[in-house]
Image (cartoon, rainbow, N blue to C red):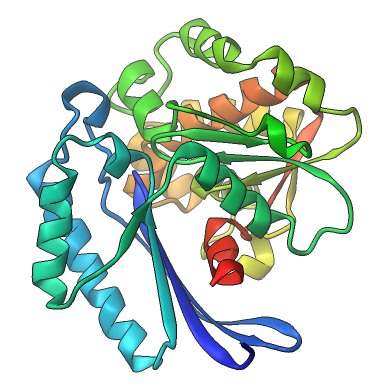
Length: 299
């Protein structure tokens, strides 16, 4: 049905995001977009539980988002939760808190890695006219979506988890070889064979897009400035080496990052770097069309 206003919310391991769009005969018209960092997946790989701090912060954001959704008179809303919620032993506590705060039944779909990958692929390729090899690096997981849908895969390695496991308190890698081996371990023969030389590689998720923002030294995140930016492996490698020269506070100032992005961007960036090396890709295109767009298209 056209000319309806639809909303999609992604409850991720590092941030919660909202997209509101009008669906008409010409496609999608973005009306509102926002992202808030709540670090819901903090410590999840060690304790398998959501912290009370992250639950409180996330519930507060969702309450704000529902107020915005009502202001835009949204016809239909879809909410998904990814790695942190699906791994947490106390996720029911989170659902209960959300329902109490919003004072109405809220349907949150906890998606597995393959469904998350499929939604990202739908969003990332909506404007493309040819096949693509898509990856989504989130806070808690990495989805790899080659042009062959049967080769979709999801792995429990993300920017937040890698930072907790492989970085010092300033977000610098302690031992590059350890992280490289962790990435090598997940690259299966199926993934290697699914990648074809010269096919475009598209990266979605906060790490992929904020690396593009940092590469261009943009003070403000604007989709039109970042979407479609190409980073070669050389560009990416030089950017990451440059970031590692700075402490956290300096990195925030030098690359116009928030503290909640600056602390995890190096680990996330090297996961992407090692992935590109393993499959033999020369670089990637940063895309702001991701799972949120996939959800809107699905409603």
